[in-house]
Image 1: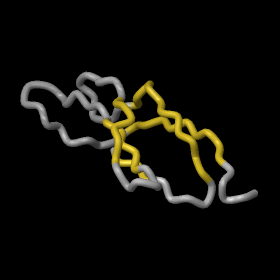
Image 2 (image 1 turned 135 degrees about the horizontal axis):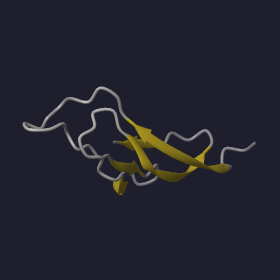
Image 3 (image 1 turned 90 degrees about the vertical axis):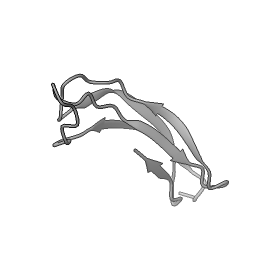
Image 4 (image 1 turned 120 degrees about the vertical axis):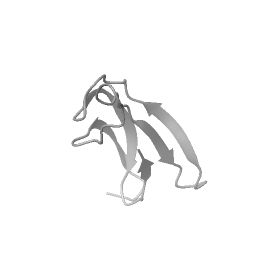
Length: 78
């Protein structure tokens, strides 16, 4: 395998034990995903999950597909 080989990776997101930031109900969480380009070192917005109402332990249905490049650091920010 050479360092230029890549594969696709599907990422599923969930969270547990989020803080309740709402006053009259539980929080309505969502996740924003950002990717840092390894060549330019600039962050770009990839997308966001759906909002799940009144849930502090969400399992998001939306997934994200990335090209995983072997032996290269790839940074994500959530």
